[in-house]
Length: 532
Image (cartoon, rainbow, N blue to C red; front, side, top):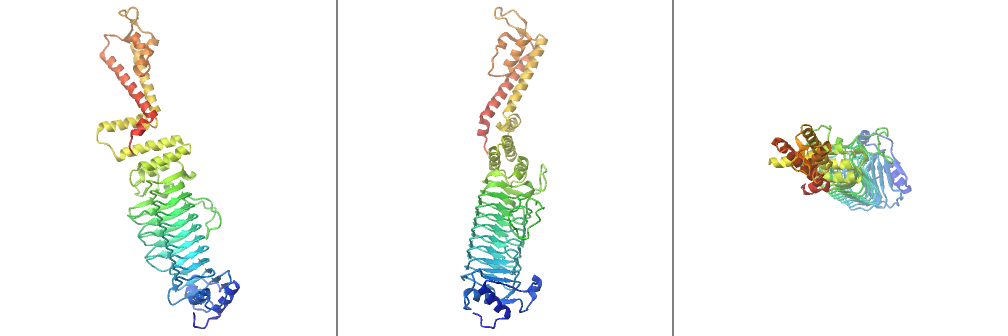
């Protein structure tokens, strides 16, 4: 309990807190407020704590304590550990000399809108409503982070829109194991940190609503930007609308969502029209650009292994600057084990997806191609699904190119003729070409009297074949499983050069080959025997 005489401003604070009114000091810029020692702005932190704990013998109004444009001073860190406050705290446009430590605090709501402080640490804090850190500016360097909320439980929202978090020794937001009943907002913010485990750490977090980072720029000079491994989000994760993530790590991806469970949308695109008010919201005329994810540490840009989402939007612009056939910008991502049901209309075309999978996946994996094909097939895009699966087999061949030439030849045949079993009609086209060649051979032989008719009654009496019999001969030579009886009545003359017989034999071989390939492709035998 304070043992000094309170200033006129502090007496006014006590009176207004009893009535439920806000204490509004004269308006002053943050820089001027930081330097001022005027009694019209200075309030001691211990007075606020004594007032909240009832040590002054005053009954506080349920609306809580509200202060604006005050300079909160303290000789040591403002220690609230293990305190239980009966009412909420709403501080706006205030400057703190010392950091705020609020471990194990229980409070109805807590608001530090547009405040400035060295850092805010509140492990295991319990907030019945929402925690507002909108417009918060942190000025201190601390290895535990600018905002630390390990194991915190917030029944409402965690709102950190418009924040400026600079920390040369740690993370911007360290919130492993946090439980948020509604949504996490981190829009229109700027963070520059140096932390090897992540600028924003949400490992094993549980969030009942959305995670929104629209128009936010985060740079981590020593590690990833977002580390949300095994996080559970009941809503959407929107890393979109001008979101920029610049990481520097060779071990952890810039955006690490390994085994994260997102029950709605995962969006790296240009976003959608904002619903509701956003702190310092951008102009609604600005449609926004897709996210940009960078990693200067030669590591992954995005890691979505074993993650799940209902709808996915991952445009190439989030990872790649161009659409060149051979993209060499070095940015990579992982999708093995990712499960999603639909693609957002913004990135539902198959060509950009194939560019990402071909040019930007860290290692060849068959599963991302099959997942993409399954989603496109479910959406009714059968042709695009087949193209994706054909490209998967081509990528497989590039990754594991066989050294034995028969295997390479068989791969070429599957690719060109039947599209690895996904375009069996290619074999029918080949069979049609064989029939055309056989028809040309038979017609040429007919015109030059190289084929003769065998009458059944006089087998040794030769006479020229008719045009119809020549066509039947062509069909028997080129199309297996079809017997018109043409060769029983018409065939090459005995004294014909052996090259004609070899040509006919070659047509028969190609006819059988194309027929077999068509059956194998149509029945799926070729697809079943191929290993991922």
